[in-house]
Amino acid sequence: MKNAKFLIIFTSTLIFGLFYSCKSVPVAPQPQFELSRNINDKGQMTADQLAKLFIAHNPDADYEKIKDFAQLYIDEAGMEGINSDVAFSQMCLETGFLRFGNLVQPEWHNYCGLGALGPEQPGEQFETEQLGVRAHIQHLQAYSTTEDVKLNNELVDPRYNWVHKTKLVTDIFGLSGTWATDPNYAAKIEQLLQELEQQ
Image (cartoon, rainbow, N blue to C red; front, side, top):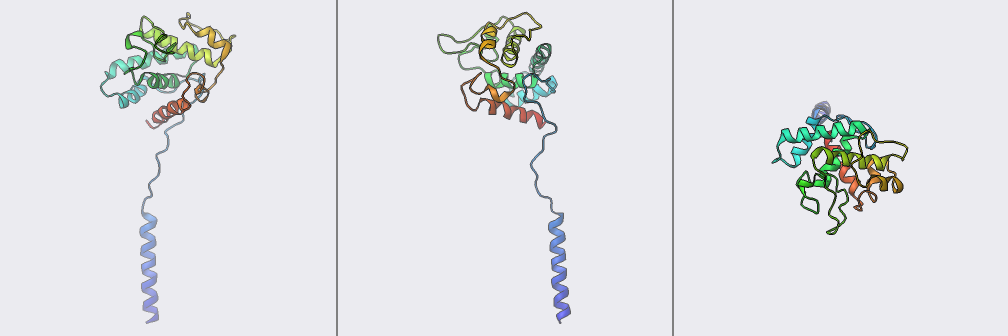
């Protein structure tokens, strides 16, 4: 009788243990890779990957146009030694994924809120997409370098020299309270970079 009882308990314990040891435990998805948060590092994402992030937040946009736009960011950032992943993510945040809606108007090609201080100063205007992207990249370069680091392209950012005299920020976390007054500004860019890492 004792042996039969022992055998039942032993068998039940064994089955219970096997069942739960084989059961998969949900694990939070791990990033495929880690992107740099430094402004002066080389971006890693392709135009296609950047466009996918954009479309996930603004599905009504034309994918091919956004892909070409993302390539502009990669090219312009590469010429000035700026992280295109950071710059593109910042553009998404600043423009609401090109929906705009605040002071800056879409036709101004101002993708980073450059000079947008209020109704009296609604922001800078640029003639083309490329010049608008270039101004954004140059403004990031002004924030993240000292005056001895020269631009490779002709200067189009009208606020470039002012920044060099007042700011020096090396990563996205330094943009809170400098580029923007929003204390969560860097965290919002960080969230977009984390989304890119999950692709």
